[in-house]
Length: 146
Image (tube, rainbow, N blue to C red; front, side, top):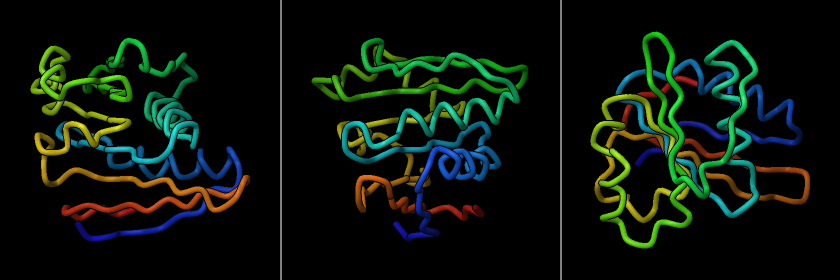
């Protein structure tokens, strides 16, 4: 997987600006995987992506317990998965992953199902530099302009 870009997030405003860049690539067949430690800001990024894509403030909750939340627009469905609690990768098939991958998917904690995800997915890695600074690396096999 080649790296396309790096970003640094120092605030929620920076996270929202980054989300606006991601919003531009949201479409059917896009799979975005969010990697990073617990509490680093993955769900916050998803909230901003959905807010910007839908052009309105909506209630976006973490699917930590439900494992998946579905957001529907007139022309696109966005599946938000949080696989932190998934115990066995075969459980993902009970959560309609085959259907979701035709739409837009955003997956937190994708490691457990990495071998069934498309090769042209977009991987976003969160690394804490210090208490107030997060480094974001975006990697993909497909051409992504951010």
